[in-house]
Each structure stands twice: as structure tokens, then as C-alpha cells.
Length: 347
Image 1 (tube, rainbow, N blue to C red):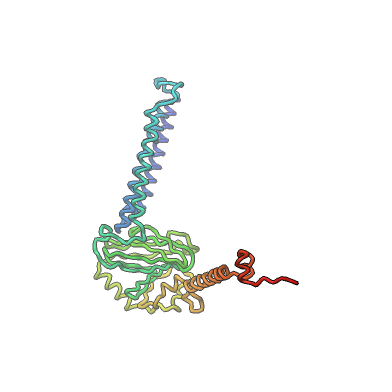
Image 2: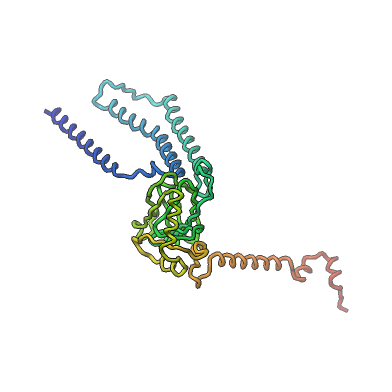
């Protein structure tokens, strides 16, 4: 009777585990695996590093889990046929296996990480393998606002809010900054995330190889409207990109400095906006915190501080070199003192 009940309980557990696994599989089926199936060569190589690293680590994890289950089953208390050796304490082959395999995997992971870190450096311009077409990079200036994204195309002299586009297989050089708090620019199909920091400029070189509409968003919490800080990125042919630029020039208004100060105010769920022209050196002014004419640019402030420190250092050097005569007289030999001042005696 007891064995029958144990069998019923065991079958119920198996059914529950199977149902749980099925539910997890159903939930995972709705996930977008864009990180593992990207559309840009930089993201593809990053995905390869992720997969290879995971497989190398599974070479340790899977055997350990399997051996744990096998040992637990083989040496269970009810198995009287399992060998029992209470005096066993050491095995050189087993020690070599336990230490050599993880060491080799760590060496492989270290080499993979070192090569990938230098090859996929976001500040490094793309090579021929990453961008097949030897073309001049498309420059895009990215500004993280509260809570929206501003994209400025300096060569095309246009700007857009929450919309980004680039022609296929053309290198893209992103210059990224933030107008308020620290943020993160991330298009999973294009490349890895890069931080956007106020009064600083970070770089990202990337390329899109397949046409399509992709999602971009902020990957760093930045306040109340963070979850809605998303934009659309379009990969398109050169002809379609030209038409997209002309559409931006034909609609919208000019992004002057005063218009930018209005745009900079916090807002959520902003629709796409297009600006047919951009004020000169607007991105540089945003980085230096001087879009408002009443504010002094950080670049000028740092230059004044550097000049002030240099002047103070020069003054200290001059005072050190031009010693007073008293110090000279106190330290000079007796013969030199006679030549400087006449010796007088009192009658």
C-alpha cells in the first residue's frame, strides 16, 4: 500500500515538474531574442562572444550537475550494492581533472575576452570585416533628455526626436552625451549599450547590415519617465535614407537654441518630431552646458582655471628663484660676503 502511494506521489511530482517546464517554455517563447539574432556586424560579434562564453562555462556546469545527480542516486542509503570506502581520501588523476579543466576554460575565456574587448572597442573605427563598404562614416550626435532622445545629423543639418535612421553597410559614428542625468544608449540589434553622461562625450562606432525597424531605449534608470524613453531605429537603403532626410527637411521647424531649451524640459511619451535645420554648434554647446547664452561654457571655465593655476605656479617659481639679499648674505661664504659689503669696525 505504501509503495502504491509513493508511486502516486512520484507521478504527481513528475507531472507538476513537466507542467512547470511547459509553462516556462511558453513564457520564453514570447521573448524577443534580438541580442542573439542582431542585424549589425558589431552586435553579431558580441553575440558570438556571449554564446561561446556560455558554452565554455557549460562545459563545467553541466558535468557537475549531472555527476551530482548520479552520485546522489548511486550512493543513496537504500542502494546496498554501491561500494563503501570510508578510508578513501585522495586521487591524483581526479585532482588533475578537477583543476586542469577549469584552468583551461579560464585561460580560453580570458583570451576571448581580451581579444573581443580590443576588437570591439566602441571608440575604435570599424575595419573592413565589420563594415564591408569603405565609405565615409555617418555622424550622428545623440542627446539623452528627460525622457526622450534627440538625434542630430550635422552633415545633413537635421534633427529628430525619438527617431533614428541609417543607410545599410555605412559606418556610423555616434557622439553621445546627456543633458541631465547619466543615461544609456542601447539599440540591441545594432551594438552594445554606451553610457550617456552630462558634460561628457562618449563614442560608438557601429553599422547596420540588414533593413528593418528596430527598437532602441535607455538601459539605465533615469527617473519617472525612464520606462517610456524609447525610440525607433530604421535600417534602410541609401535611396530610402536620402528620401528620409528630405522628408525631415520638408517638415518641422528649425531647432534653434531657444527651441532646444524648450525641448529640454522633462516630458514623457513624446511623439516623433522633425527639425529641418539645427543651430550651429548646438551639440558642442550641450556638452559644455552653455546652450543658454547667460551660462558660461564649461570649456571656457576649465581654460580659465588652467590659466589661473599656471599663473600662480609661475609666480611661485619666480619667488623661489629671486631670493632676497638677506638670504644670500646668510648663506654665502665669508669671502663672498666681504666682496658684497665693506667690512667696518667700530673705534
